[in-house]
Each structure stands twice: as structure tokens, then as C-alpha cells.
Length: 146
Image (cartoon, rainbow, N blue to C red):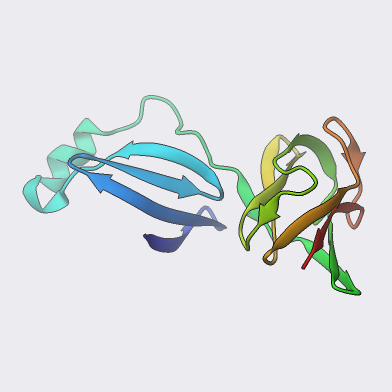
């Protein structure tokens, strides 16, 4: 597996290439999996390819990955909202095992989806929010135990 951090319009995206077969690849962008096509640029005329691939509509933008605010006490990590917004999805449940980079919660802010990811390995002990809640920056979201 290859990992890359790509910048698009000033935003960083964590891209993991997990599988390449023929002319397609399975990639994960900020925790969201995608199957994408591959063109071998060494076999193509770049000017012709640019002309053929001009987008007729804007490409979808992957959710941004947010570094969460973290508070540690007694072997527990409290993951806090890195920004205000609407909780549109909770990707974990109490008892789930997580590792660094796993998506815990998806927050929508200004029409953008932002993935809040796990800062470490552990087990989900508590979830302090529910889907549809509006949260302020710094509000506790998830507690992770060692």
C-alpha cells in the first residue's frame, strides 16, 4: 500500500492506493474508498489526453480530514470537535477497535464534509453526540480507551 498527501486548492488529502489491477485502482481518500481508472501517461500523447479528459462538470471533492482536538486523562483520550458544524455521520460504536486515521465522525461545515479521525489505537468507550446534533468547536465527540 502506498500513502500520499496531495494538495488541491490549498487543502491536504490523505490518499492510500490499496490495489492496482490493469486499468483501475482502489484508493482511499481521507477514509472514503474510491475505484478509479488509470491511464499510463508514458503511452499517451499528453496534449491529446488533456483535450479528451476536459471535464464537462466539476469532479466531486473528497471530504476533508480534520485533526481533532484531543484531551488525555487516565489512559482515556477525548476526541473533540475541531470545528463547529452538523454531525452527519458517526462511523464507530462503543466497543469498536480503531487505529490512527480511522474516521470516527463526519461533520458538515459550510457545505463541506470533514472527517474527524482517530489520533491513536484504542477501543471506543463512549460517544457523546448523535447524528443530527449541532456542535461547537471543542465539544467532546468520542472517548477512546487504550
